[in-house]
Image 1: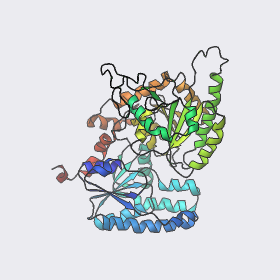
Image 2: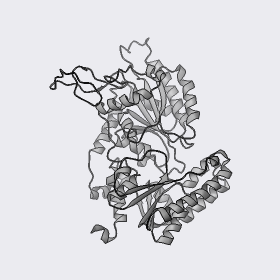
Image 3: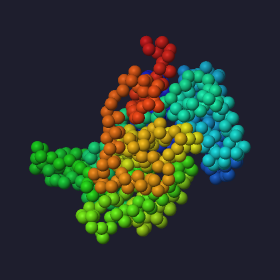
Image 4: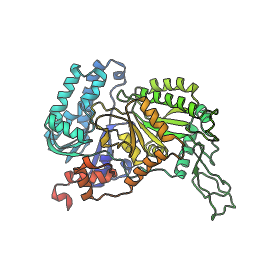
Length: 478
């Protein structure tokens, strides 16, 4: 979606081809040069039959629908066809075929390796995995340009597969509207989300009295408040003495994790860490402790998990059983519209990433989104994660549930005034406030090994890396 938006802003007539599902980002329905082309889904019975039978039927159906869309729905041969990989089968072969027939330039956006994801389901030695790898090598090796989500992905594919074409690393970045939310924005969001919160969760959270307070925010002087969104205003309002919504001191720490509920994210680690945190909070917040005084040392945690996928029901069922006996932790699942997702991240106190990478060469987009919203993260370690998460600077890295629980205690002690958490937040804030010109960005990316931490928006990054590739023709500059 972000690629399509960037092409359209350069006034390319842009056709975004994909399946219906999540609501598109607003620009895709408002920019004049974008057209959404939806593919039809395979017949429902395909989802009910075994994978070995379903896969060929699904692939055959995709071949017909994708070819029809590329040849007949798009009115003339495009200058560029950009394809995200994975999925690899059959899309890589289809764009290779259409590009060869029409002369369109193919750009492959390497986000991961398709065969490595299939290996999670079938095992690395399965014959279909070996076939999928060869398919990816044959149809992915040659293109006008290759974009890689990490340096590790570029180095591996260039060395092992001998890629032909322009090669550039395009680290994922969030769009510019992702930001840290102000207390009024948090207030407005949770006024909207309030009705969707279950009664049992509402009992765990601080009491809310809409529109004057939510579970996370409050307006203290609600007889003298500034006109704000849904908040009522007294006729006798004194506009020179106004109270805006502020964050509650008694609020729980809001933790957020986004997932597609797939096997490459082991949420068992997160659940075990939450169990350990619950035990630790009971211990350190014990009323028998003389040094506790009037406030808790460790706060309550509201763990919100966004997204949908095949393993969601399994893990959420386990959560419901566990938290029946929990006093300091609650875990809930939410599915948010595209416009509310960055607001939730911008309202949270800490992000959790369980992504482990099937290839060990991609990076989690969810962490990119979190950083764009000024949200520090605790992330499960894997080979190339340090390209994004700088341990102790913009987040903390863990290897197992015990380390994650220790990180939660370190970052949340004395919440909401948590020195360690504040330090990570300030690092993100400083990085987002330093604009990088093209020359400096190029210097940084050429010497990344010696750079602790740099950041930029999606548009800045795309204009630096991709724009020169698609505007090489001099006619484009005129």
